[in-house]
Length: 174
Image 1: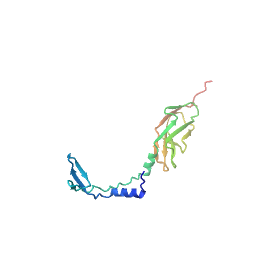
Image 2: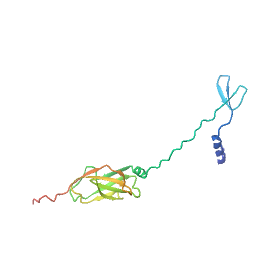
Image 3: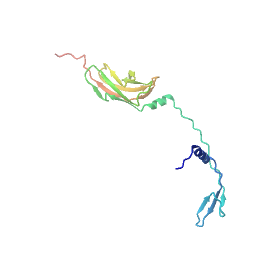
Image 4: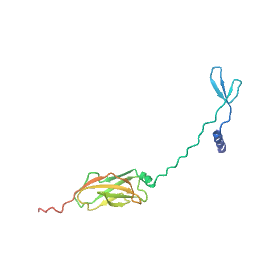
């Protein structure tokens, strides 16, 4: 096994990057094959090899995205997992939980905002929200991730739910 020192390896790499100044000869063998070599012979003719065609690299400006663009790219998925879209909240006081799932996890300084019928209902860092005394009828839920300036970074698809509550206007037929 041959050991090559780091210094020898670096020297060899540097030597490979230097322009080649060796002479090149061309000859034709008895079978008619053209041979190029660096060793002169009586039948060989010297060939002028032009310098290697090189160009300088074009400087490429570094891309420094705007802060909001990088933050938008952080989150890939935000979805309301509970209640399911089209879900029914059965008879009761109109209390229910909303569960949100996001990928990746919530970043520092960001919050989850829950919208009920396009109005800000609650905001925080928990992925579960407790809704209380929601009136009967159809409602739309939407989750959003917002940064420190309340800029929306990602929104979930809307989820609709139907809340059933007993009516206080019904007469007692007892």
